[in-house]
Image (cartoon, rainbow, N blue to C red; front, side, top):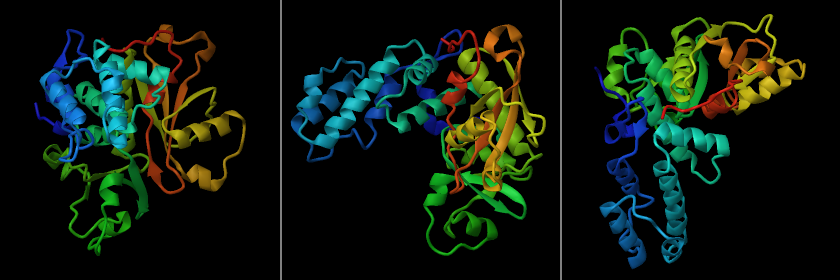
Length: 335
């Protein structure tokens, strides 16, 4: 089996009998190596002592007074957030259960970076047997923002962080339209280069074609189905729609903030202007394999999923909406 996404730390986690990820001391220690927590040379003795103690025992209880005694205000905030996040993780049987509880109750002060890291490693678990680079590249949308552009009639998505590193003069049409530096190596995923995805999976430097009728949107639909199945133990079919004809938005889920706004407008009977319609990246119809899991108020209607980009052509998926917005009578994480 070809490995991928080594940076998510899945090798540091165990699995329980149900396939859920179990937090280990090694996984917790990886957070202590982050630059926000590794004490700089000028750090006070309290911060250095706390860091060393947690490296020795990452589950060690930490009193509020210990964090309050740290001299640097930014360090106090970082440690406070980290300890709360650690306590949330170890308080659940699996990483999946911790994530689901977090998004149901509200993420509160949990940094978006931590949420994305959980999504990253949970998806790595859910896609462990996947051998399709198109599906894996589409899955990156769940935890990494994308920048989109139209080129020669194709809608292309590239990793926003990769694009944001741009400088110097571009040397190819793709590099030019995405604003990438001449030294950057980025390719649109295709059948000829798909085999190279595995060794590049942690670089996030392959773009994906999201043009209607091509493999990108269908691959994202497969990721959505796997995510729902793994996270809430419900089997669904996700069908890609090429146009929104004869669609009744009785129940819909926005896959991002823009998609939610568009869904709200359609549900209220509003007409979308041309600019808003152009921001719709993908439209899916979701159906449940077992209708018995659906809430009565859904009335047997299909569920529509709306994916849209911002006016600035960025796309920031909110996979938590699939865990909280579907009309499922019984929601439970793999645990």
